Amino acid sequence: MIRTRCWVMSVLIAASTLSTLATAENVYKCGNTYSQSPCPGAKLLNIDDSRDPQQKKLKDEVTRRDAELANDMEKTRLANEAALAAQRTPPAQNAGKPQRVKVVTAEPTLVYARKPRLNRPHKPKAFTAAVPDTVDKPGKPGKPRTHRPEGAR
Image (cartoon, rainbow, N blue to C red; front, side, top):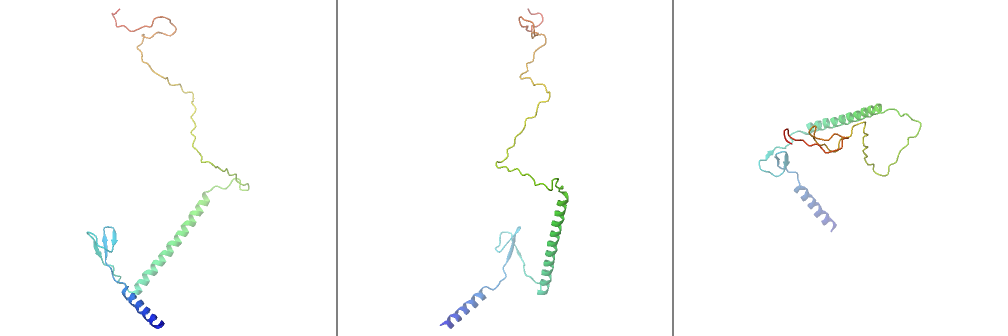
């Protein structure tokens, strides 16, 4: 009984392995995207890898070496940036004393201070235009003058 089950399972595993063999699928370029299904105006691409295993191994080695070189260059750049940042920071004036830290519990609000007036004349509140010699001169009581055309009484 167990032998029969093992035999049936091995046959099923072999059948499923054969049914899932890698088959070449078509790849279509649709504008700037790639797809397995064609679209209007799609171009069929040839994606066969015609390299032999030795050429593939050589290319993989070059890619790995370039990645390591890029990582080394990044580490060097980060170290140089850290050294420059350390040079730019000013030395602490009170290196031996602990720094006082002010703890703010509420969010700060912006307060705009009004600029002080520096001997500026005040602007008049209203302006009224008047023809010369038609307005009473200050200090003289009496009837206000009005403008009359010449020859009229």
